[in-house]
Amino acid sequence: MLDLLKKFCMTLKTSDFDFELPTELIAQAPLEQRDHSRLLKLDRADGSVAHHRFDALPDLLEPGDLLVVNNTRVIPARFFARRETGGKLEGLFIQETSAGHWEVLLKNAGRCKIGERLALRGTDAMLLLTESRGSGEWTVTLDPPTPAVELLDAIGQMPLPPYIQRKDASAEPTDRERYQTVYADRAGAVAAPTAGLHFTPDVLDALIARNIQTTAVTLHVGLGTFLPVKVDELDNHPMHAEWYELSEDAARTISDARAEGRRIIAVGTTSVRVLETVGRSQQPSDRRAPLAPASGWTDIFLYPPADFHVVDGLITNFHLPQSTLVMLVAAFCTPKSTAGVEMILNAYHQAVLDRYRFFSYGDAMLIV
Image 1 (cartoon, rainbow, N blue to C red):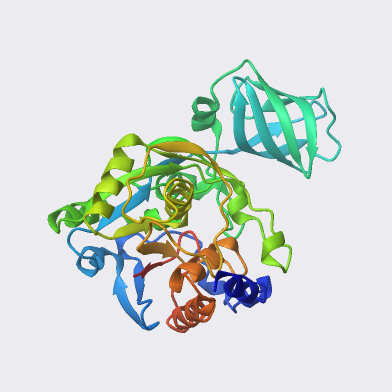
Image 2: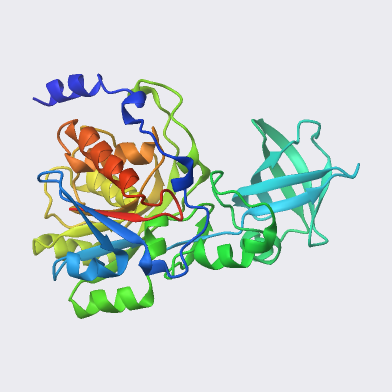
């Protein structure tokens, strides 16, 4: 049976995950109040949808459910620099490989050379270009060495995705607050876990009042989340890797819920990536077996058909056409078949007709 499913899966192409989206539905700014975003509830049993506001979430879940959020914090990773010749460059911090050594993306840096020094705007620090990795990616050394998070918190701007356009920096204070979840705790992401952007302290309090538990995992969202799928055969797509951690406390909380038969509701595809990475590696055949703490890099790629070992429900935003994120959500809709593609595209079609807002600052879905 599994071989037949795999053979059937091979007929799915990247183009099968395409859909029409009017550009005016791409949200360019957050709503004034986070939890006033819309929430489309999708029932996997029959594909039916219902329309709510996000602050109704506690009443749409069941007492005893366990929500698993991603507590990563977005670094203000966008920075500006000046060449010794006076030319201006825009950069994006990717990661700190060791003290004072960064991997960055530099825009319009084709004439830059190894050994060149760039002055960071807003500080006396300099970046020494030590290696060109191609496609605008560089390894640099910071002089003087300063922790990346500390420096970028002072001079950086939020790394908004390319479909959000800003003509000037006037919205930066708003983006600093709103392109961040209210429970963000561990710095390391260069993109937000956007499903969590809708939560407010009031919603979290209402969940507690309804006996709905919350625990946190960490996955530092990387630039790969925005990379397009450039191949039509899904098996040939090189999935990006992101660092994750399942703490001892979270592992125990999730294990207790599974042992008691309670639902695990992942908040965002990033939480799914953590839970399914751990579930597949530790307990591939027993849903109620306990999970152990774990950390590392995951490049898990979930697309139809794909069994889900841990997750029973999903809160997510509306994703880009032909993206790995919409593929994951389609896989979750009907895990052991490819019918989830039609189900999710039908739900997206209804969302377009009802003028839902899409992508990072857009509305949300609850899939159960």
